[in-house]
Amino acid sequence: MPAYAAEPAPDRNATAPIDPDAASSPLSLRHRALAVLAEPDPAAKAAAARALRAASLEAGDDAIGAALTLAAAGPVPGRPARPELVPPQKVERRGSLQNPAGRAVLIHALAHIEFNAINLALDAVWRFAGMPAGYYRDWLQVADEEALHFTLLAAHLRKLGFAYGDFPAHNSLWEMADRTAGDVLARMALVPRTLEARGLDASPVVRTRLADAGDAEAAAIIDIILRDEVGHVAIGNRWYRWLCAERGLDPVTTYAELAERHQAPRLRPPFNLAARRAAGFDEDELAWLTGSAG
Ligand SMILES: [Fe+2]
Ligand SMILES: [Fe+2]
Image (cartoon, rainbow, N blue to C red; front, side, top):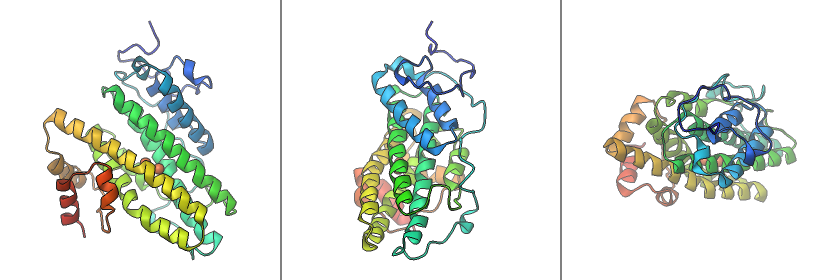
């Protein structure tokens, strides 16, 4: 019997060491996503997330372990001792973006978002059983791309004379993961379709400010991130709609209910409607967004 036979299994391998020979690991891809999520070192986590996606491209659907019910043997996500996590109002205010130190505070905040985004994508893979194979493949792709974003930003931060961990950060992204841990529909509604979509709105403003400050390299990283994030929100829309259809729910009213129940952040203009359309939001959803915002 293969180690990842399609039946509920105990979580004895949940935090097993990551097999460096990724393509031949006997563990299911979902077990391995959990192991990468538990990895505390950011660079090691990013590299492992990229390797796991590469392995998944060579693996058949049986290797996913979609039917397995997994449990984390230890705390997730693994995270480094620094950055110190503080309430949002205690996060460092950045100075002028004309100074490298001022830009470093901004780049650090973006790197922290991407570190959390790796964790959120891996969590979507291991936590929710019984989804189609395409769901897991999509979220392994997202984890890979978030790992690239983190790696690019961490490298740019080093050029500015700083490192990831040098400034305090807040934990509100992962708090939404905790609030939506019990239901994949809520997770799709409130992480990719809310928090990542908010990133689509913010990116043009951040990009302009970095370019105006003369940091063309940082602006080019934001371009890569925005390109990929349209795809992440599209993946969120795809699986949110799939789940709504399966449960016989109306996507627009269900979103409003979930946002209220899970205390989603209120979305404020300006909205990047072009990017949101490219990510698959329809006109009813955009009308609800613009009508309820403010
Ligand atoms: Fe990202
Ligand atoms: Fe993303």
